[in-house]
Image 1 (cartoon, rainbow, N blue to C red):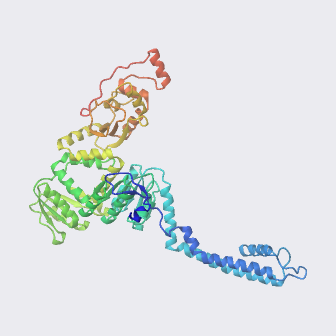
Image 2: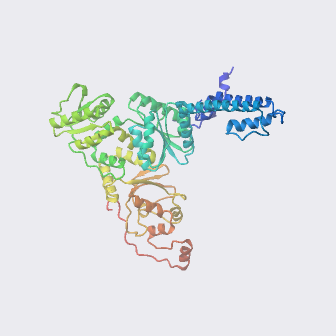
Length: 592
């Protein structure tokens, strides 16, 4: 006999996806029970409304029972009584209609006035009391938040957790011109969102990310939601967000913060796209700075914010004995990474006092207190001024003292987390290039770094994606139908062909395969995708070139042709194309 429970409807079959644990598609919950403001008003105002209706009914029928005057002995009709009670109870009155009242009728109308004043006072008081209730105000805020989220018409990122990491991510997203929605348990953090000076009004609400209904209300089920970031301080909450995304919207990218290995493994089970452990990342980057300094400089530069200069090579960084003075997970993670690199590491608890660093070559102050870290770092510098000193910064308010201390390395977990998360969301190809840098040998990194600096300068380049299809590059597609166009041609100046734009092709994606740092003689094909690094104005020139046939022909051949299609066809017919002398090839990257 079949199990009857299996016959119950369980939603539509989910789209097959190997890394999703979802078996049946269900709608993302978006409505919370008993939070409708209109429902609350009707429920709480039921008694006052009954009182008002009762007063009007009693007074209406009572007035119709009052005897009239000697001149007009007939009682008022029910409709006339209702008319009189209505304007008496709702306004200041319009006199005695349809004729002069008797004393009895006047006494009843007088009683009506006082009864209505009492009824209205009671009802208005109840309404004012309701408006001050936290539940009602929460319902109003929730409905306003839901309307804002539903009204978003652009792709946006759902950020769960607005601590230091969440704020850093939101600022980076706004710099990229991206919309986002914030969910955080702490009401003060959400209030801070409105005071942080963003150029746009981004929706935010104080609620837990553990509630799938709140995630739905915050846009998890929205068509324009493109990614979810779980950045709370709680690994369990972040795991809950990962689970909800995997089961309800498995097609979305989800990036989670995690500092515990067990929770990280559970997130892997739910196919989180990226799990960032900033403590583990810092240890890996520190080892990279020691073993592969060029790769570390290039990766740090590419992940830094706009306008940042190419970082210098870290000095005093060498093999030898390292002392890590840290508590909690940070000390364990960093020690493990340094030991895996073959370094001699001594892990010291900050509670044991100032560590001995007389024989050490490196010291890491990684306690959870910035004051303790500063004190230990200062002691280490006094004891051994040749030490490489790294300091963990836990709070942004201590940025100025740490800057004045000028440690060799300052570890800010939230900043590292934000850089990587934003790089992965805003441009997967850009992150793929950074990831390639992290895994290449140091010689390759040094060569690429020199090439990029030679082309775009020593400020952090801006990245842009260019799809060679008929929508994003129609002129290039038309040209490729009959001619050839190389990557070197594409980065020529359309006004002066000899000049190469400050643009560096970092990645070429063709048929799903990525080619890193493709050559300038690479022949482009329709359907290619390029990741270009460069200066903002030069990237804009490239994006403009691909839309104009005359510009594409000029950069490809050096011939100056008319801008308008009619005149170009006329030039072809009359053979009056003016061939300008080629001013020489565009220098390759290593020469530019």
